[in-house]
Image (cartoon, rainbow over all chains, first blue to last red; front, side):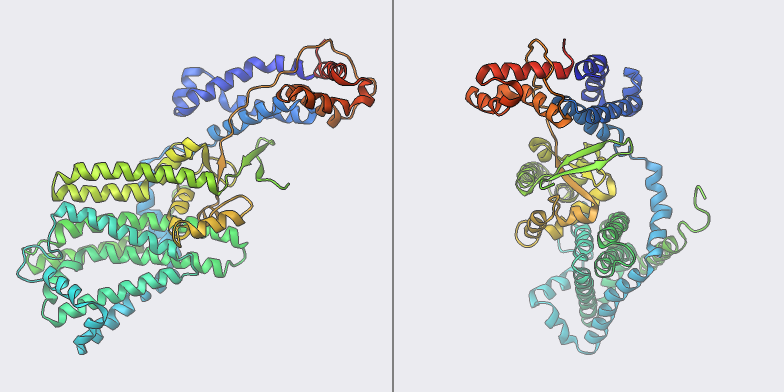
Length: 325
Length: 226
C-alpha cells in the first residue's frame, strides 16, 4: 500500500487517539474511558501495528515520526504507575516490612552490633574513667547536655522549644540521618558503618557522662520509650546501607548492575519502613518522653510495652500464610 | 550507534526511542527546582515563623518535605517530572521506558546524597558524563534514566507535482531518501537544494530547478499520488 492511501485510511483514528492522549489521557483511567468511550489499549496496539508496518514499508520519515511519538506517549499513558492504595500501604507496614527485615537479618545483626557495641564500650569506659567524656565532646556541648537533662527541669531533653517545634526538628533531623546512612552505604558500606559507629559513640558518651554526674535518671527516663522505634529504625536504615555496599563488592550470581538494582529496591522499602518508624519515634519523643512529671513506673512501663511491641512486630509480622499463596 | 538514543522493544513488538538527557539540561532543571523550593520554603518559614515556636516545628516539616519528599511525589504522580523537569522538557522513566514508579524514584532521590558529593553534584556529573545514557549513580542503582520529552515538529508536506515513476526500479532506502528530500527540501535555501538535486542528475537527467521538479514528481509517485 502506498503511503498516501495508508495515511488517508487511518488519519481519522490517529487524530482521535492523539486528541484523547492530549486531553483526557492525563485523567484517571476509569473516568477518561467512560467519558470518551475509547478503547485505548486496543487503539494503542493498533497504532503500534501501524508503526511496525510503516517501518517495514519504508514510509517517509514524517509519518514514522508521528506514529513513533504516538507510541512513545501511549506507552507512558498505558504503563503509568498504579494509583496509590491504602490497603497496600497497611499490608506493607504490618507484614511486608517485618518480613523484609527478617530476610536481611545478617545485615541487621551487623548493623545492631555496629551501633550498640560502641555504645556499651563508651558507657563502660566512662563509668570507670569519667574524663573520657571530655575527649568525645567539647566542654560547651557537655554543658548543654547537663542543662537538657537537669533533673530540676519540667521538660527533659531540651533547653527550649515547644512539643510541636521539637517534633518538626526530630523528623527533619532523624529521618535525614537515616536516609543519609542508607545512601552513604553505597560507598562499599563504609558510610553506613561510619554513621552507625559514630552515633553509637555519641549515644554511649552522652549516657555515660550523664550517668557519671548523677543525671542518669532523667536521661534514661527520656530515651527509654522512643528509642524502641528510633534506634531500631537507625539500625534498619544502616543495615539497608550495608546491604547496598556489600552488593557492590559481592554481587553474587547476578551482574553487578542487576544486583545493585535489587539491593536498591530492597533498601528503598527498608528505608520507607524506617521512615514510618522515625515519625512515630519523633511523635513519642516530642509529646511523651519529654514530660518529666510522669512517675518512673509509667515511663519504664510504657517503654517496656513499646520495646515488646517493636520486637514482636518485627519478629512475628507477616509470618504464616501469605495472601495469594 | 554513536548517539544517545536508546531503543527499547515493547511488549507490543515495536521499539521505543528514549533520548537520554545529558548533564546540562538536567542541571538547568535542578536549578529551577532548587530555586523554586528555596523561595517557597523561605516564604512559608517567614509566615510560620510568626506563629512562634509551634510554627517553627511546622517549618522544619516544610523543609523536610522540600528536601526529601518533593522529588519523589512529583516524579511518581506527575508523569515522571518535577516542575523544573517539566519546564526544561525532561522526564524520568524506568529502564524499560515505562513511567517511573515509587521504589525507583525513592532510590534515585535518596542517592542524591551520594551524587551530590563532593561540592555540588561532583560524583553525579562524572557518572553522568561516563555513562552512555547519562545516568548518575542514583539512576544506575534505581534502574531509571532521564530522557528528553520530544515535541512534534511541524509536519513537512511533499509539494504537489504530477506524479511520475522513476525510470529505473529503486531500492527501498533510495526511495526513502527521495521522499525525505522532497519533504524537507523547503527547509534548505535554493542553492543548496539545487546542489543536492544535481547529485541525482544520472537519475533525473536534468540539472537545476528542472531536476528538482523531477525529483518531487518521483516522490509524488512513490507516495502513491496520482
